[in-house]
Length: 412
Image 1 (tube, rainbow, N blue to C red):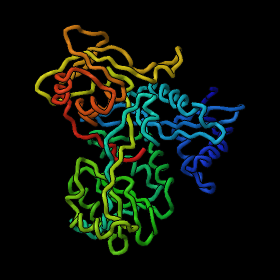
Image 2: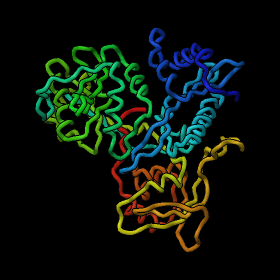
Image 3: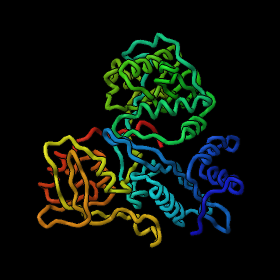
Image 4: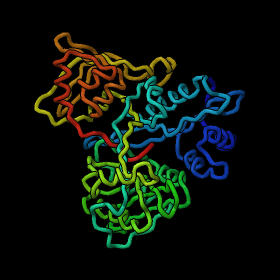
């Protein structure tokens, strides 16, 4: 495979064509893609010196308990019609991830189009994203009494800064470049909108939401793309803004975050579900695990792991990493496969090698990432994923790695 960095002067038309052939681009609206191309690492694979595959990644952070870890996000993997089934997407994604790791990323993440494909690169599935379809009139909160600020794509820098400031829950992700927020806004329609409040000491945006139209502008449905808030009062005020729309809007899809249970804030949720079933305004909950993560530097990830447990747990880890076979011998990074002695506790870490006196855990990097993030406990991963060890060790891991369910807070 021949590949190189994207060149704006020569490759823009080809990038537009690739996205259009994937069905991700409207011919008359390229603003979102052009913004993405301006703020991401973009690599292209070539056929006859013409770009036919495009991979875009961006640097950011992922929250792990109270730590912000350097994170690489694979934002898009697109292949033209003539380049399908030639492994371009997989091989080019590997090159992009390796380049991001060389620049400091210790975790990588992506949104999957189907489960299993990116497992080939060591990614493990995240937790379920739960979305509630809510009739705003049925929210058990007071309508917002204050007049909010109307937000547009021109406010993207303020929104991006607010999102970074508010991303303090386990698993939340942020992008380094505020242009990622602008591109996410440009991805929608002209009828999408944002509302928020500028209560900061210097007029900074303190809490806001962005809403995408998914139906008709008068009645919806709408989807809350993201909400940024730090305090209970700010969250309830944002819900109050949604409730204020209830004269016209009949359904808003809202994502559960911060370990909240939105059903607590809905009046007669079961009755609403039955009365609206199979309509355009179906008040139901849906759940899907569509994001994935993988550890890219085991030592640095464990250095930032501080678990609230009574005693340390020490064990051997035999870690496999399928990405290794896709990397050339002279690549700057070769994955994380190997044998380690791991310590998990208030201070965690690992050393290369093994200790015959310790129990051994065998795991793929994807499965171990899921354990480390708290997606699922070891005893569950032993049943459904590539993670094996003595039952006593699995049960000890369940007791030691007790984390909030990771929540990314937004799509990527």
